[in-house]
Image (cartoon, rainbow, N blue to C red):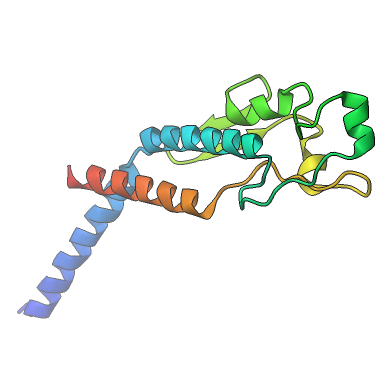
Length: 150
């Protein structure tokens, strides 16, 4: 004779397995594409404000640098770095599949600005704000719930 507890456990286990299988089938391509758009907008804002993702202003250009380049806009140069983080330029790193994405830049000098050196101050230009992380998590979670309802 099968006890009620065993039947309830088998049923719960089967429901849980169906949920796990449904989760494994969710395609996140759509929300991840929206995430890329958000990241590009956020990085455009960072360059406009000349600040990192946390809102900290980048160190100003030195007087000799301003005299040599005849500009006072930080990390403006040839716009290569900015364009690689704010659009899908040739130096943009954007890889996406149904479950993941990669966002960044292949500009070779980017690392030196991001980390700083003995002579170059750190100007973090790649990053993500806490509120953006919250937005992204909500976007992906809402998508998953919608997909699991089907």
